[in-house]
Length: 151
Ligand SMILES: [Fe+2]
Image (tube, rainbow, N blue to C red; front, side, top):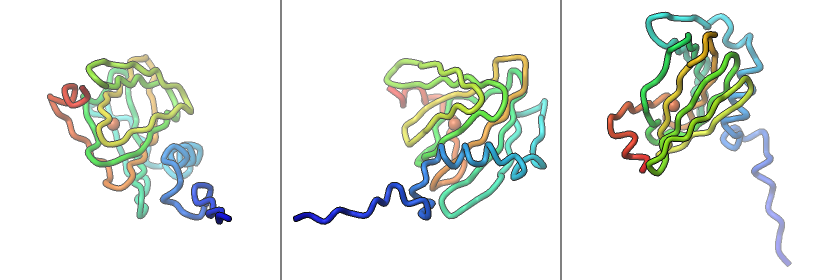
């Protein structure tokens, strides 16, 4: 006879087991937690720390038309981001190819060590997104060889 283990995956009281997409969606829908932080900066992509917990950093980003990141990874950090408003385009470099993901409101992407991507707002309207960085904070490594790292 075997014992059935506790269902630790479904244990909501353990924040470390809460998927970063769920965290991002939760903050995305809780506008009162970040509304006062939101800015649009024509000079550079705007980012503000919303909250830091034992596991996660939650960041609010805004993207005016044409604003973008360079190709980057997040070091040893895992996480996710969700589009709150507008539309974002993500290019993922993987095994020598570039995959393009068009992300609309409510859509999320997950990242982990070795995940190399670039995000941009290529449409005429501003965009807002919530980003969750788990264990390691908002590490961003802009590397000229990031594309090679994805091969
Ligand atoms: Fe990123």
